[in-house]
Image (tube, rainbow, N blue to C red; front, side):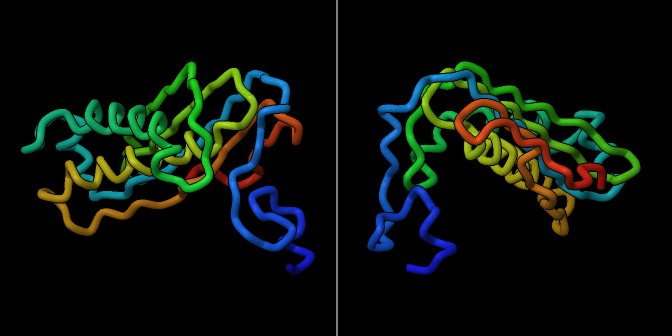
Length: 167
């Protein structure tokens, strides 16, 4: 095992992947916020905003998909713990000058482990759903900028991204 992998909690001393035991950790409120973007043409964005797409309400479908994905993160990402999530908020904001849609997810739990993966999964699946809902109108959509913006709670303390989140 290398020095860089010796501090990874999901690796045993022998370098094998395992699920971290969080049973002895103190439960605390943990919140994570992530974002991502779906780039599209101005014409496609206007159709989405107007609700004039062949597959129906694109924004509502993507919002629900993101919420559902956050709740199923432990089924999708190996070694993630199932969590009793108390809040998943997914917001989709048209960005006319971009052009495209900004997706932001906030996930909250009172628990023993963080919800960063749940927030990132919510954003990812909401973006993929936007892609699926609009691909019949435009094939060259781009999903980009998926990142953790912030997190609070837990032993490592708060995190606030210093990256520029405005594309």
